[in-house]
Amino acid sequence: YIRDFFITLFFVGLGMQIPAPRGEAIVKAALVALVVLIVRWIGIFLIVNTFGGGKRLASVSTINLSQVSEFALVICSLGMSYNHISEDTLTILIWTFSMLAVLSSYMIGNNYAIYGMLNRFSRRIMRRGPKAGGDSRDVHDEGEDHVDRNIVLLGFHRIAAMLVAHFEHHNPHLLAKLHVIDFQEHIMPELRKRGVTCAYGDISSPDVLEHAHHGEVRLVICSIPDSLLQGVTNLRLLQLAKQVWAEADIIVSADNPRQAQLLYEAGADYVLRTAKLCAERLHDIVADHGSHTVHHHHVGEEVKLANIFAAFKEKDRDHVAQDIPV
Image 1 (tube, rainbow, N blue to C red):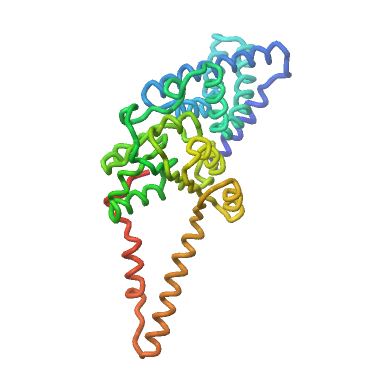
Image 2: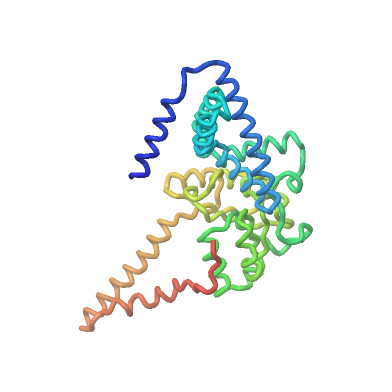
């Protein structure tokens, strides 16, 4: 709270230094702000993308860092006190800071939407394929055939990680049918160790989906709810999947019954609802507990919760050693 108090004082003092607006100063400040935005794309986007971060991460990072730091005002004030710069320069910088502070607050809140628009615009203007202009780099051989990989996971998070762990323990042969498309490159070495193929790419791009899998797709799964997705929704992923893989069955996720109904109306074959699945498991536990309680009550035996829950604990064993960090 003390920190917030002094930050408030700083910005109040900054506001008191802003002179009456003059057209010349505002125009110059707007030009400086434009230069700052351009330099951000050169200095941040190119570096992140060059070192393997991908265009999605590079774009979002650039958008999030589009503002001017308040330390620039401190340095500029020191320069003016030493007569290195004039008061007009400080005025222009203050207006530049104010413009970018307001603009960046909206840009950060809509960073993934802005990335999506820029990505579509760049593909339309430059007319490049996803291999040249999008995040569709396959971690494996780009010419790899995925004939046997007919189950596609769009995005990889906790539920998908547990699904892979469950397959590995109970049905390891199904791992040979899985293909994951996600933009988190750090999970892919662990998936490859388990025999799961991967493609690095933006799942919200139809071009990426089309080139990220080579072969027939029979089942598409999106196990990430909208509350965790960024820049895309399950409804949009459902539409993209039906567009790219028209013959495939599609499973998506919903946060509430209304959303699930909309997804079914849009053509989803099944909609996952975590709350509903948890309620079903609790129903089984409570029903089993109740039946055991009645039975043991009639025969005069003591009921121990540990014994009743043992079977369910065995079913829910996480196999921590096999989990994939997400």
